[in-house]
Length: 239
Ligand code: ATP
View 1 (cartoon, protein in one colour):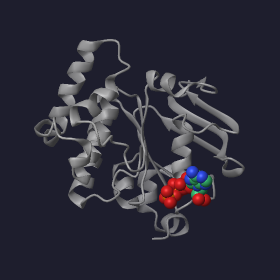
View 2 (cartoon, rainbow, N blue to C red):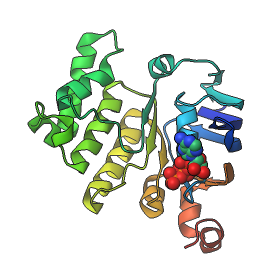
View 3 (tube, rainbow, N blue to C red):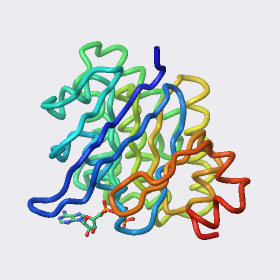
């Protein structure tokens, strides 16, 4: 039996007539962090959008727990534990911090558990607890990042799809975010697919690295190998 939470086989997707993913194969083991790396335009964001159900694949399969997700509506994907934090983070500026967080738990039937998850999010992200009644657009970049992550986490996802969490953030906040991902992986078995331009910090936290180029996965390797093997790094990462 495979312990992959997520698999993509020959996945293709694009925007209207423009193909972007040309047959992506990948495996993401349960309870691990996978960094998706690649040049601008390689298709990383498009891959996350396709995996989260925002974009329909034109070919290929996505398997969660070995089950084909074809035709599964986004709400169902959320119920099955897939959370997507898009690039730009998608915090709703006109809603308060608390309202944004509650959105993440809206679908949960167990209201008591949802309330507990909210408390946990405030413990995890203390600045948010102090700014519960502030509007999304009043927050700093780092706080918005926390809120977007917090909103995803209150839904108790099994798979977190995270697009460019370090974009526009101070190095200290980036380091905190990466440490938090590692903690969630270790403590709760969370599985993460992380798209990052900041290759070094992504590989520092990841178990596996996937390199994309022109809409394909050209290399999948243990993150430690990508960190340590100079030839591999030169060939695929350019540093
Ligand atoms: P980046 O790091 O710049 O975000 P990426 O690897 O995430 O790059 P994508 O954003 O997935 O790459 O973009 C892949 C290709 O798809 C690019 O050529 C881009 O121009 C195109 N593309 C992205 N979004 C759209 C869209 N909404 N409509 C049409 N084409 C798009």
